[in-house]
Amino acid sequence: MRADAVEALLRKETTPIGGVRPRYEDLGLPNAIATALKALRVPAPSPPIPRAYLDADLLRGTRTVLVLAIDGLGYQQLLTAKRKLGGLALLDAARDGGSFFPITATVPSTTVSAIGTLCTAVPPQDHGLVGYRLFLKEFGGVANMIRFSPVDRSGPPYDPTGFVPVPTVFEIAAARGVRPYVLTRERYIGSALSTMVHRGAQMVGYVAASDFGVRIRQLVAGRGRRLVFAYWDTLDALCHRFGTEGDEFLAEVAALDAVLEREVLRRAKGVTVLLTADHGHINTFEGDRLDLRTRPSLFDHLAVPPTGEPRLVYLHARDGQADALRDVAETELGEWARVATAQEAFDAGLFGVGPPSDRARERVGDVLLAPKRDRALIYGYPGERIDLIGRHGGLSPQEMLVPFLVARL
Image 1 (cartoon, one colour):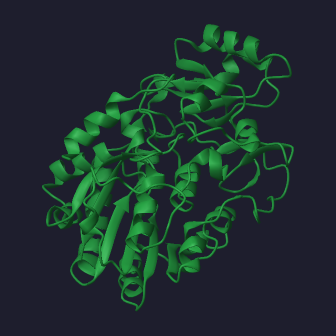
Image 2 (spheres, helix red, strand yellow):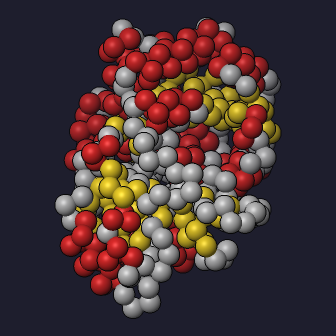
């Protein structure tokens, strides 16, 4: 199926709060990483990309799979880069006997949730990492899930051991005789999030784009079946600060493409490359950011401060006040955001397939706010940057559609 036809299909399906419906059953991030496992003849907890979209012969005979996870590289933004830069080596590699089309990110379209899914092959409601800031009942407060510590910095980090209740793809692969590796920045190795989602992998660190490319080349050159998961984060940081699709974005895409062309595309042999991303970005500006603290009536019904993302806010009601909270949210914020109950969101499959776990329900709360268009809802937690331009977490096509590229080297 042509990439534009797949894109039209994904854009067609919406949700109770608008945007793009996540396709966890066939064309989402769980299916992308399940496809990588299938290529290595390893069963996965989610189905792979169906044959209707991806020729199974493309994966046959694979012994090494390289999964490139580029933080912040949305599908639309990648097409923009291709047009403005006059082409990309990565896309050329897929054109010659490979495949390239969009799939959907997770809800929320944020790194914690999406990388959690790419590293477990299950949707967010199954692995439990359903957002960047979450109310964790077991710890009695709101946590920053990157640091895995109280969001107000009032205490030490929590223990991440055993927090994710499902096996990682690295544990699954290792049990089937595949050697799993994770390539990430040196400073992330041993972090809380890495401890949660990289269990079972041999960790390898890098410092910059230069050794990122070299390490990939070295890792895919070994013998035996190998799964190499390589995570690149710089593009996301640039988009947050400068916005997406501008000069800084284009320069970073061009630089990364050049490194990968030189070190991997030209020199690696016998490797299947799967490139995808955790989310895209949408640009937000000062006039489209609302501080929720300017709506004090909302807080009369809240048990804890707003959680989730500025592009997808979770509200936890005081006991017996869920209906009142939704009514107030509609009245106070209806112009800024679409409002839905958490039950409506779970029923629509926003966080996964089938009934959610109790922990997922607790962490999502009672009412969801999905800012309209390019707007953002800010609460102002300690250290929160309210001036970010590029944002994600919402359900817009810019945030939800990510690339899925397969190339055989």
